[in-house]
Length: 112
Length: 112
Image (tube, rainbow over all chains, first blue to last red; front, top):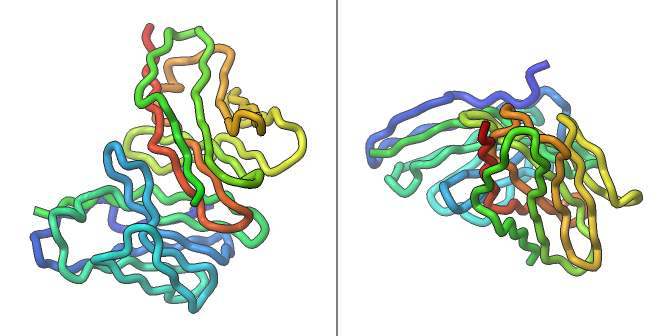
């Protein structure tokens, strides 16, 4: 019973490098989300996808792109990483009739 | 826009003592309310939720929360804290099936 799976768990990037964070859920949820968590800031929404084929910006979308590949998978891409993107990234999903979100284990990203 | 305030950044409680973590929200109508717990290096786990009905809700791990409309509050309580309860506790709110807005979290420390 995997729930929400994120890869990788840890990553170190150099400034200007690109990478894609992967997320998959096996709960048949329609909605998926990407958050970042920074000390003293709480969780902030980067992008979300209410259904397959749709994506919308959240509170802090600059510097990121997303792809809802299919109902299960929602990826987050950093095209040119910056030190300000050092953070812990969480993917989450939620079902049709309940707004509660289920979270992955997180990806700790450091940009040097 | 809805917002969530958790006034206490850190709280220290003696093992066996009671616990109350505060959460206040700002929203015109009754939102959906949630408490999550996050252990170090882990994702967020749902403790309990309130959608409607009985204002006292029971969750996992012996936690409960009470919704008070007049105070716009949804405080989390536990009668007797165990050392394993040390973690970060995050309150969240959503308007219907929209995205969640999170508080900045309260770190619970448990002293022997």
